[in-house]
Length: 97
View 1 (cartoon, rainbow, N blue to C red):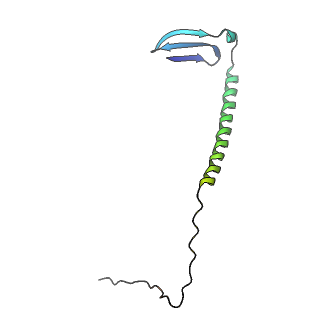
View 2 (cartoon, helix red, strand yellow):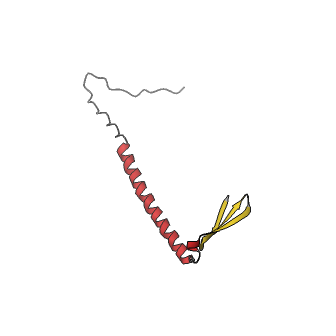
View 3 (cartoon, one colour):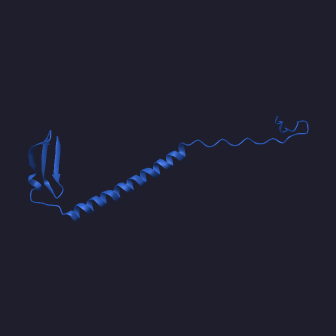
């Protein structure tokens, strides 16, 4: 079933079933009203701005949750000072044949 409507005339919808026109449905409360293109554009812009604001809020919440639930990096091992008794590691060298 497919419902089609004219955004400027919200009082009437057309119902299609399997690609064939079935009927028109008219709302008597909205029958005499029309919506201008300017009003539709303004409503869409307002809705778009509201959605962007909501997405921004939710993204900041997600960022805060990621920071809270990210484990702290392990502290680097503390280097120990070499004592006189420990041999100093030497670099091994190989001869090319």
